[in-house]
Length: 151
Image (tube, rainbow, N blue to C red; front, side, top):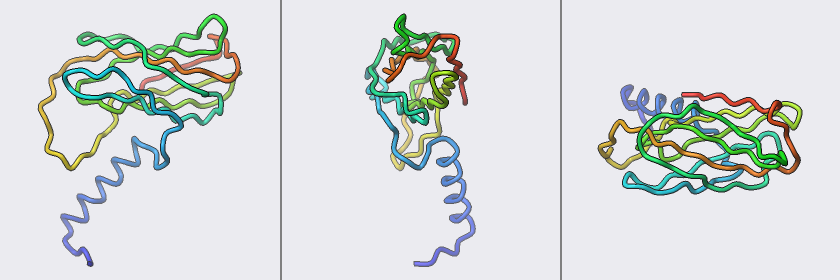
């Protein structure tokens, strides 16, 4: 079948660009199931380019409010606790881990573009405070960790 409708081609092009801008084409290194709530199930997709991530677990989640994005290293340096604020319709936030133990850069994308063929459901403008812990294969000092939020 050959698609010749320019409007359809434009819509498809925008969808492809939007997906590639926020979600890598490869599957995540790790997916951490976050707590479910009245707006559905939530999963943190971790893309580890450092080779340091060996596992992860969900932290707490609370509804309402805003918290600064932060990464806190455990006393032994083997675990990173990441805190961020997402939204009721941000079901698959992303965490990118880049660098090495000397300079570890984290990027959290709390509200990536999510495309679905299902009709959109109403989402309230409510902040969901989330956290997850990522286990590392070698210790990383707190001063070697930087985190930023990407919208």
